Image (cartoon, rainbow, N blue to C red; front, side, top):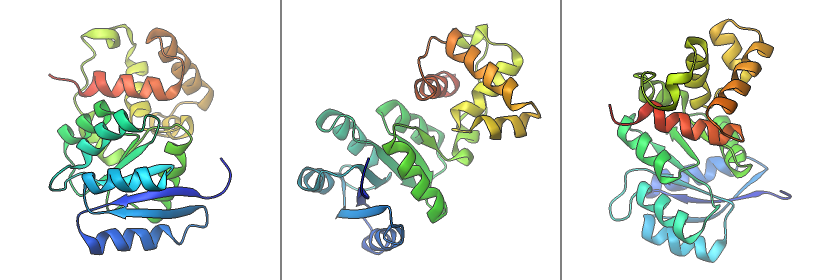
Length: 212
């Protein structure tokens, strides 16, 4: 991608919406091209501005963030939508990911994290705030489904892959060599029949956070 990343900001609270737009405006690689107060207004703004990514509040009256994700999936396939929320809600995270959201962040994240998330999802990545992911993935179900074939270490690596952690971060958390982590990720891709890390993360989130 060349030029600045074009963003539409959606939040029902005008002060927060404007503040978020101003913060994003401090990043030379990002341009806020539109704002909306709810999901319905956002769809009109998206159609008019053709953004590269949508940043939306999760909880809004009318068409909320999850509804906007679903509508964008239908009307603008390939357009990444990142949800921002103050709610550390396991069901909300699951609904966002299953609905096709490209990212899920808590509103107290840093400007740097927000900018990096925008870049990652535009590049095709999936980003979930690790604090939210730890809650959502706190009760894995290794005894059923495709995860039953994983070793104990592979399951640990899988849980961290699902949070969006890099191989370096996983190696540090599990006290493993980075090359060992890379081998485990390759094994996960093979065993779970996924072609890339994004597909792997999506599958793992569904398996680790599904109905218990």
